[in-house]
Image (cartoon, rainbow, N blue to C red; front, side):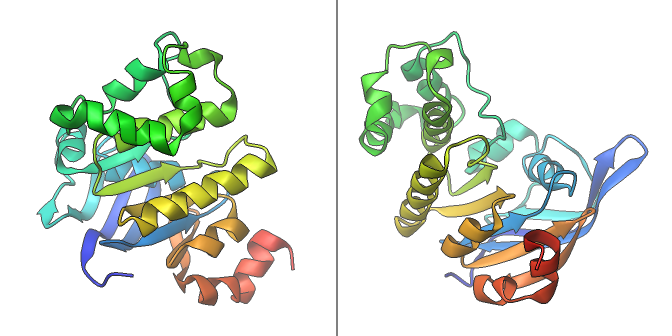
Length: 238
């Protein structure tokens, strides 16, 4: 786990119209870290991801990535800087081929390495190689999630935000997905894992934050969070 801050969010407020969703968020992801943001539906997880990615404006506070403030930057500039967001629900292009979906991931960043990065993704996800010419919409849910993550990797991210990657997957595929995320991190990629799956997320992350009603109510090491009585009551019913 690194002590060098790659992503540094301070006092972030954001929302929609007159509704404030995020209420003073402080979040740090170090270079090489894998950090979890955990919370139930409606806690503000997606709004946090969208704000970091430049798709929702920050009303107050700052977002610093790789030494540069990005809270006023465009989404395209944020991707070009190396912060890549794999959204909830996969958001693939169903009528395009698997290969074309992957290539779109390098549109703003790493286009010169497109072929090499596609081979890297195929090596990581052999099923995508087998289905390279197949329409993405005909893939299974697990294969579509592989494609969404592979598309993110095509941009050679410095930080990969994964929004609910286990959503809708079978228990076996969930295990495979978390093992793959851990491998990516061990290869040096910083990951911000945003999930409802508390138990398996805490098994692989260095640190975590628990989000409730737009604020972090618990933060610390995975071990500290796992043993916190408030977490057990809120998420595990203990």
